[in-house]
Image 1 (cartoon, rainbow, N blue to C red):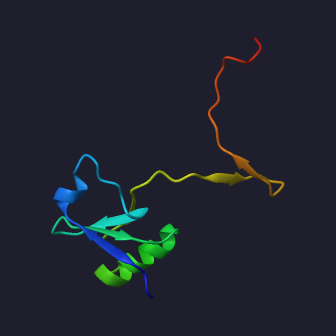
Image 2: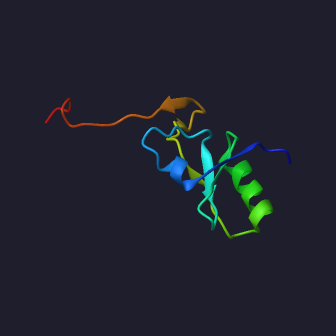
Length: 89
């Protein structure tokens, strides 16, 4: 499996202006942050299990992911917030 990995030190990661280079990351025991360049969490977790051993580390998301929900009719709907402001009493 050829997945691109970017290693970031703790000092770089805690910098105020730090921008994560990838969506998923793992912090190892030396407090190095390994960013896994993939769009799927399952692929990132497979790499983590293969590299460190199964069950030792879990992948975390560095960026907030947008999700779409597929309803019963098979149509994707966007997510949103609901409020009571427009509801009739």
